[in-house]
Image: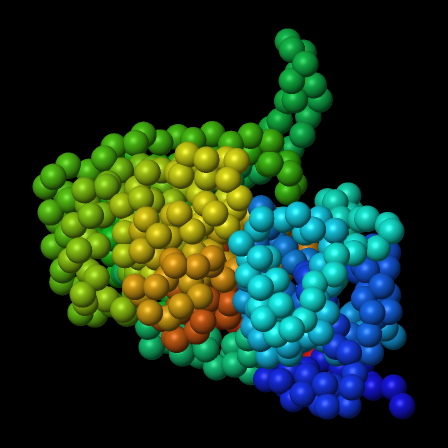
Length: 533
């Protein structure tokens, strides 16, 4: 009688018993190991050959967080679904998910008679493979090299198909449902966490900006040159920069205090009024002549032009002392502090260095972000969460060729930061965290990573995605969530933000509504039941 495919997927702890039973009954055990992200004809011939060498074929696949690819977005298929794919093959008798970077724990537990590797390993000097080979031979097994007659590369296939698959949202619900099931992310747990936001006090430090939208009527091509002629119809002004981060916190239920710099103009006065109306306390130092304004010209929802009407003016030593004094007063009140640098002078590297030293012993959670490739990111040593874009990360690290996981690890190790969310715009984000709990061992091994596709289908206005992501992730971590849960909740907040025109804060009700309609949360119970989570 054939095994149900889900019963074929076993835990590592069951391998010793399986191996012993097979040996006592005189059966030959064969082991294959790989990623199997896309099962292609080369894999099928490889597995058929392996099965022909004995009686019981066990396939171990590398778990998601042990796979490191250059873009940080692999594997495309979650480990639970990759295991299910392999278990559905008739020639495969058992499937096991390997959490480590090599098959050594699998080999040690199973003690296979035969270990099948691809022909490319026949003359390999890779120490990881040599260690596997030695372990097989110590158990009186042998290694056979065969890749089948047809050679394909899952990476090449995915590179050819990936863009069209991503454009169609291929498999994203299944991927997200498996991720949520694995990490215990449920609609109920997320709702409970959002309710806890009301207990949190957060200080935001950074540049306040006015995001101004000028809505225009499109005319004809101008007579003097082949340029578009538009007629302004109306304007709308939104709090931007660190101010919108504070607004997001307040609308999500937390109590926020903004420490920022403003100008002497009426726009600065309006910004303070907006903060007061939202119940946000503020410490605003008059540093600029005018409030920094980012002006965008639109026809309907299409942006035509962005004008940056601002001057970068670093705060002087006196203003820096005022900021540090304010933070000293607020540190016993704050559950979290967020630094966000937009480049207009509120945050400087000397200020960050002193502030981090002052806050670190007293504040449970410190988060940070930058806009653009600003070196102030490197002054956020000891932060608990950083959320740069991929371009910002690579620009700060000065390397656009290194793999994303490699660049992430270098930054995290340099800053001693345990949580990094690298945002990828419309592609979502990649979350990085250490494998070991002990701080002294955080960067001994490769990082754990989790790729989360964007939760928004079509963005109406992508301007506020990062501004919504950072405060939501900070609040979630402050409530005790793991990075995956925090990243998912923050992605939902970003999705809600980009589905509206203008940089408006996302409220608690909007976030909960967004979560209520997420297909992976509604389907996760069925997915968890299938994979035995």
